[in-house]
Length: 343
Ligand SMILES: NC(=O)c1ccc[n+]([C@@H]2O[C@H](COP(=O)([O-])OP(=O)(O)OC[C@H]3O[C@@H](n4cnc5c(N)ncnc54)[C@H](OP(=O)(O)O)[C@@H]3O)[C@@H](O)[C@H]2O)c1
Image (cartoon, rainbow, N blue to C red; front, side):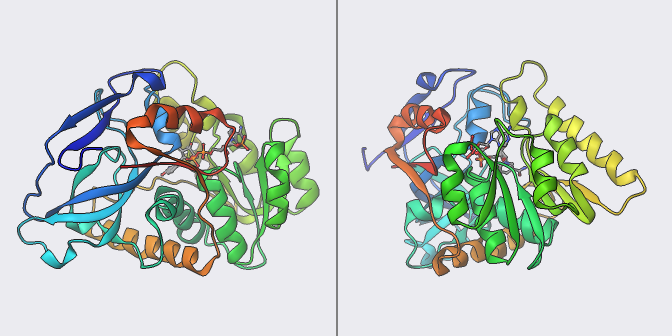
């Protein structure tokens, strides 16, 4: 890659992965309060898979540069930013824009990556780690001895959630395809095959009094079952609608339906609680508070990585210019862990 220029990958519209376009240009400069981050690692998450189908509920209009998060080093600091930041390794949560060799961001959005953690390793736990951490500790407030159900226990978010829940002393039941079950058992997780087994019946066998928390990214029928599996005092955390990824029609409708269900369940007289987790919630209302929480929680995730409580699972590392291959690989369902792109 040309070190003197900027390279980015553009999603021009609803396309197959091969339709992604590589664009080259000048390295951008930082305005007041901003920095230029030289990307070292970004990745393919479920969001990009939905975005290329035009199915992510709040994606920008095409064309745009996708890339939910990145890890890199500060290459230049704009006016009003501590010049000493140059050379620091940082993580940034973006939603879009990360698939670029250089990215301009507000300095206040940076989260330092502690020494001893590599860029690709750190990348695997940015969006996945912050989502898992906040759902577990801020939403469900899971405690030692409780039992939780994690859907997609081998996925990007799910695998971090499982490890953080085990580190917190919880018993974990996890749904996953059968090929992941041996690895899940090794982590102390009771696996259920969501493709062939009756999930509610199996969960009731394993936890006859119900579970204390369910983390559901599947939506549709699954989230109704998830609600019913809660023990008194339990919390449902819904955070996606993976089951509608390939549907036609409004991309907002599955999420609106979920929000409606959550509202209704909470309005019923009961001792259970439901919420829809959105990692961006609260940002528009109070950006400083959002940034403080993000920094504090992601730092906890990096420390858990450093302590070995969670492991970085890298499925493959490819150059940014091979984003199409990376996306194909991530969507193939044949790999475990994050497909990481490097500059
Ligand atoms: N709300 C938020 O703020 C937020 C933030 C981050 C992510 N998310 C959402 O979280 C979800 C997961 O993202 P990710 O990047 O972790 O995706 P990922 O790595 O692709 O993992 C998804 C996992 O879902 C599993 N799966 C698919 N269909 C399933 C079903 N019917 N029942 C149970 N599991 C099923 C797959 O399991 P197998 O491989 O075992 O088949 C796969 O491991 C996405 O829907 C994403 O949009 C939401």
